[in-house]
Length: 315
Image 1 (cartoon, helix red, strand yellow):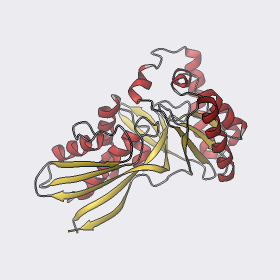
Image 2 (cartoon, one colour):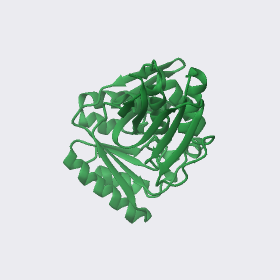
Image 3 (tube, one colour):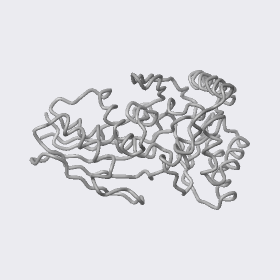
């Protein structure tokens, strides 16, 4: 049966994971964005947004989910149009892959309405065009794990080569999102344009060590490898209280702590759910004391599913 309407979900992601700028990312279970989409007789896209978040573009010409949907409709040329509602639950400028989640959820929804849906792997390029539209940069470290789930290594961008990485099931991710905004474009604009060779060598070693540590569940190796000597020093000043929060997380038992994506969210890795709760309390308390800001907390094991269809109604 051909689906008449669908609801899709795409999860938040933690990208970079410390040293892996633009090449490492992992999907978590919450938060995330939903898209409701239905076929309509008139070709083209009818679009609206339901959200409690601020600064979410309502105009389809400025919203990334609408952009991706329109791109797919123009290229794939189905005999119908799409009525789409973006249920936006993720804050913009959070460091949680907000634009990627909207892009992926929209791509999944349009695809499910097609008579012959594309394979999931074929949807990544549409989501990446959404990232380029929203952030000015074609990076896959949020979009790939949001779409596919699990951990992803972006081995190459030209040609694009996304490699799934194993993450030990005992590890728990903590994301603390302070109530401040850091736009990805701004966070990318302040990055260094050149780096010393010694820093690059250290960063490469940390990326390799982190991938091995996550796969093995090697806590000591993870501790040594969640170290970003290039991007974190530049971006930390955009996040009020970051240094205090990081110290609090590590003192409370975190295996590592760094900036989630471009920030302001800060992530930590915990060896258990019990430890994650203790670490998250230390982090939120530190944000409040050091910077006077409240924050939201998300605790999750690795989301192995990625984007999915919540429900579908057939014609």
